[in-house]
Image 1: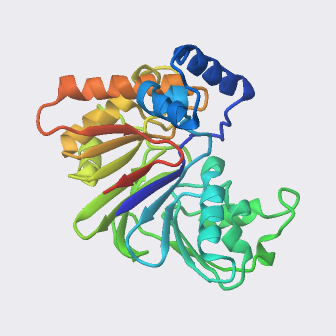
Image 2: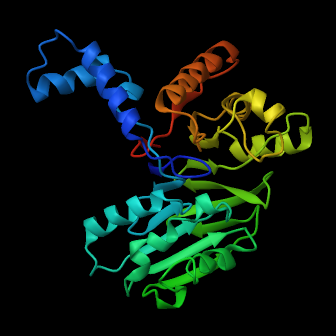
Length: 319
């Protein structure tokens, strides 16, 4: 499988400000002074080889949307945050508006940051397209339709041209969806949330965002470890610090990088990707958290290594 990240922020979109862009430019100019960067090629090489990701790029600002390529002709997405618009524009550019496509969408839950991209999801406006939206969440259809109702949005749901279907899923039961096998799991989060394990040809991706873990709840912990068992990639809600999850933001429904490492080590997962970034964290802070998480995995490792990465808009991971 191939995983493409179109939106990786939690709670709300976080666009890069003019001040932040200027700070990156100033820092790069100072670092590159007297390097003879007088051609685009030299400047590009300098950015690639001598600047960190946070210095030369950005983790992005769109809310949750992840594409899973399974090798078939149909699309498979996880969540419809603001990143769904970027995905939709790319898909339309690839096929053109006159070539009907099928889009399968797994929705973790219906908090606004995870569905806010649907009113701007271009394929929904085009007759001939088929959009199948799945969730274990009981209020999926109500929430999606409600966004397109007056006075919130000018285009009513009934005016959309595509064939749109809502398919309820039962947690723990495997379903064939978009060329893969998908199994949902209930997660601890206000208003309910569900993770999805996506399997294809012996490979597995677990998409688990908006989930809080109580380490003292041994039964729930072991169930979740089973859900992650030997996954090739775990896309994990690492929104808070460990201290926040245990104090100020306890019961807010999110997890941390530290808990992600521990769960993936217990489950013998191969790759942990930190996801659902806190909107108040800038690129430098997210980069620092990534470095700290890599070090944490190294010093706590008891078996095989867990690869650590941090999601950013545009990231592609081969599974």
